[in-house]
Structures are given as structure tokens and as C-alpha cells.
Image 1 (cartoon, one colour):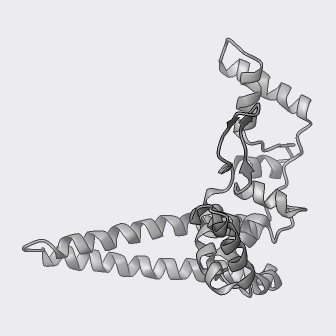
Image 2 (cartoon, rainbow, N blue to C red):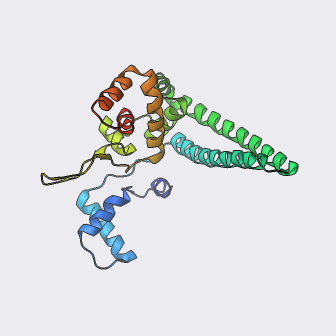
Image 3 (cartoon, one colour):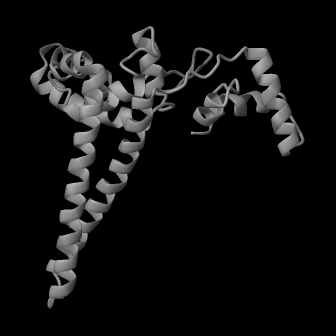
Length: 236
């Protein structure tokens, strides 16, 4: 939000993964850590690495991301309310007033969730109808995942290659080796968009059932003795 605000005010901005700057400061073996020293280190990082300038979000993208954040909030509240209703039901003498209040709250949350999902769908259809149609035609990719993919990538215009998108999501493998004897297990980096990574992982379950190409990838990895979870990550 700050980057978007500064960009609209005409300020040149760069958005960098904070972990990159943290590692840069650690590499310098700095003994002093203050706001002033951190600001200087960030400036040095920008000069050394020639960081790219921030690309502003489109108005549609900005609104959709706000809607997704609000949707997540309401979904969590609805789940908590459902659990509360169930918890009250198993009590020996549940309060009718409490039960009615919780049911009203859940119905209101249902309406809000439906309204937000409908608004996101209409906004994406206005700008990215073709992308939405293509994504939802892929077995295993549901509408919710397709919408979020389109919004966060601006219709995939922010990435030139599939590997760049994988890095953004955080599903690229990380391998740690030392010499010829010490080898760590390969893991995904998890340095990326957690929500999108989780959505794609969930989609991989359906993809393995209904998408022949994904099913072949899954079976090939499992047949090599790898874990089913690793195979699902590869499908994602």
C-alpha cells in the first residue's frame, strides 16, 4: 500500500524481498544495528544490485486484492461462527438466544462472502475474461484459484517465464550440499506468495484425478519412491 501511494505521488520506488536485504546486511558483518545503519545498508543494497523500479498495480488489481483480503477475514469469521454453533449444540442446555444470534451472524457472513466473490468475478471478467476462461478450462483449476492467479499476476503480464512465476509462488526447489558427503533433502523454497502456493497445492489433488498429464507426473514421481506430498508439490 505504501509503495502504491508513493508511486501515485511521483516518487520512484523499489519493492525488494526483505530477506535479500537481511542477508546483505549479515554479509557485511555489521556490528551496529540502528535505524540509521539499516537505512544506509538498504541504500548500499540498492546501489550494488541495481534494483528494478516498482510497477504500480492497476486499479482493478488493487481493488481485487483488497476484496480478497476482506474475503479471507469473513471466511475465517464464518468458520469460527460455524464451530461456535456446533460447540453450543453439544452443550447439555444450549441457550436459544445465543444459538439464534450465531445463526443470524452466519447468515450475514454468507451474504457478505457471496457479494464479495461476485464483485471479484465481475471485475476480473471485465479485464481478463479470456484468461479466466483458459484457466478454468484446465482440469483441477477452480474458479477461486483462477481469479486469484489472474489478480496477483495481472493476467500473467508480470512474469516472462514459468520459472519466474514458480519463484514468486515459492515452489522452486532448494538444494543444500556440502562437498560429496553432506547432502540435505531437496525442499521447496516457500519464499513467495503463501496464499497462492496453498491454493495451487489444493488444486493438485483434483488435477491428479482429472488431468491426465498431471496424473502421469504424480505417478512417475511416486513410482520412484518419492513421497506423495512431494509428488503433489511437483504437480502444483
